Each structure stands twice: as structure tokens, then as C-alpha cells.
Image 1 (tube, helix red, strand yellow):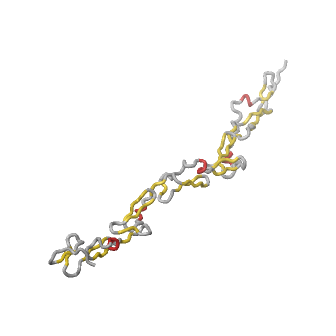
Image 2 (image 1 turned 90 degrees about the vertical axis):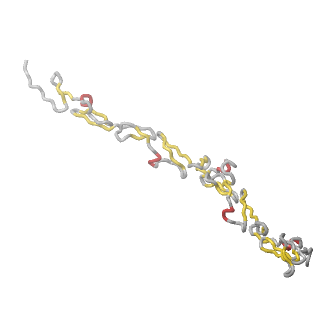
Image 3 (image 1 turned 30 degrees about the vertical axis):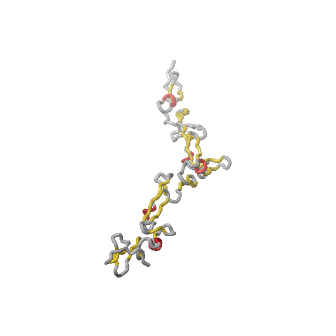
Length: 249
């Protein structure tokens, strides 16, 4: 027999028991030959790391490390096809287009159209009047009322606070009424008060001699000489005779 010197193998190779140099499979011999997201491919005398090629379904894309598929947010990336006036809602692998509040989808025109709440819910939304507005509605009240804090009910307005009457004012539900103090009567405008001429209306009944009209009342008068006014303020008595004058014209 004869002896030969051992063959020295290059880096990446290992000598087998028979003295032959065989390739080392680093992909199986090394604990972590490649970082996450890469595949190890053995080569003669070495190895390479190749990025994983994930095939993600529609609506998903590969993560930055290439290890998994993540959802595509079409609403944030502006890849959605929602129309004007619609709101985009992201879903796993997809998205949904919804109409704004106060609108509904019309399949014929494929657009969002305004909901007429006043027609859909007659008499349920407002106490008095309902007016439809784009995407909503507005309540209003009849004359003599104002909209309450909740925007739906109506409350009575106290018109007397603004002093609309010449003398006295009484607030009533939805309106007000003017009235006058004693000795006055309401004018044709239903707001002003005018003096009542009691003398003209009494036809000589109030006073035995002469009746003088004064604002809001009247006064009786006696002849200038020889008579005085009785305690009742209506009858004239002679100063000496102390007799009543039945009538004097």
C-alpha cells in the first residue's frame, strides 16, 4: 500500500470518509441561514437567500417583511370607486360604499338621493310644520309660536313682553288680546284705547244739570250760582232751599 496526503477542500466543501470533497448544504446545516421573509437556496460551495414571493388574493398585498398577506385599505389609498356623496368603509379584502346620513342609494341612477323625511314620516317629526332640506329636515312653527330647544316642538310666545297694546295686554295660546281700562274702549286697530264719552252716551241720565267728559270718566257740574253739588256727585241742591233740581236744560 501507499499513503497519499489528504486533499484539502475549498470553503463551502467538506471531505467525506473516502477523501472526496462534497458540497456543504448550508440551508440545512446552519441554524438561520436567511432572515425572515427569505428562502435559502443552496449553491455549489455556498448558498443564496431569495425573497419569498407571496401570491396574495385580490384586496390583499404582501407585508413589508414578505411573510404574510395584509388587507389593502382601499378607502385610504383612494383606490375605491365610491361616487360623489358616498362614504367608503373598508372591509377585509374589499370595501363598501354607503350613502351619507339623510340619503339613500338609488339603483336606477346608481347615486345617492336625498330622503324626504317630511314625506316618509308625516306628522311624526315636527309639531307644526316640516320642511325638507338636503340630507335632513327643518321644523317651523305657526305665528304666535317659536321653536322649542329640541328643534321639534313649538312653544307659545308671550307677545305682551313686547308691549304691543296701548294699555293692557293678555297673552293667550298662540296670540294675545288687548283690552282697556275702565272709561276707555278698544279702537278699530284692536291695539289702541280711546276715551268713552259717557256724557254723549248717557242722554242726560248721569247728571241732573250738566255732564262734562274727562279722560276715562266724566264729571257733573251745577249752575255757577245758587247751587252746590250733592254728596253723590250727580245732583245739584239750592244753597238756601236745599232742593233738588229735577232737570235743567
